Image (tube, rainbow, N blue to C red; front, side):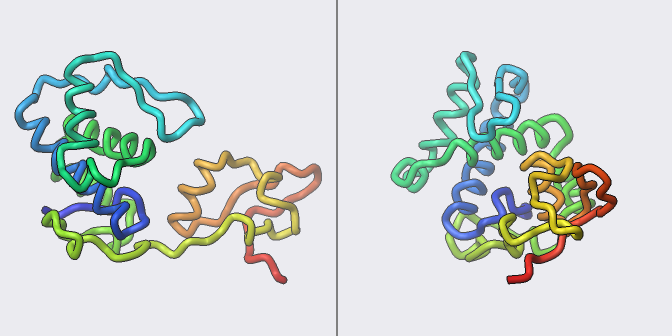
Amino acid sequence: MRTVSISGFGGSYEWGCQRMLQLGIDWLKRNPEFDFSVYKSFRDIYGIVTTEDGKAKELDELLVSGDPKLKANGVTGAMHQAVISHLAYIHKHGYENWLSAAAKHRPAQDFFEFDGSDQSCPSDSVRPVRPLTELVCQCGHGFLDHALSMDEAASKFAKGDLTAPCKSENCACTGYRQRVQ
């Protein structure tokens, strides 16, 4: 199936996300009436999604143990939440619309064909990783001096956007640069 990277990590972690996505899509075909609003998450906490709904618990059980490899290796809360979010979008808008929406803001190297095999996943990160500790703003203030949450920054940085207004008084800088050692 044509897909887009969910984790950005590649390897077995991405394989787990993609396998969970496959299992979830198949489950949704059998349960088209399912309502994702039964899931609850927490503001500023990623990796914890809860539900008391019986059908959602059925889906969760499938996602974490529906493939022997998933069951043996386990899945993280972040994997679960990411896959649930993607499944909710696919369920509401359709698979092709999910791919089209992702194509509007994701680079071409994030897309690949997944057939369930280890070899069909990228072997490593599909995006270069830029550690936040190596970034300072143009004026030298630190990351936390800028008006961004960690989630906002991660999203912007993943897209190569290093702009953010500085919160320091009388500072007009608008972005980051690599820290000079």
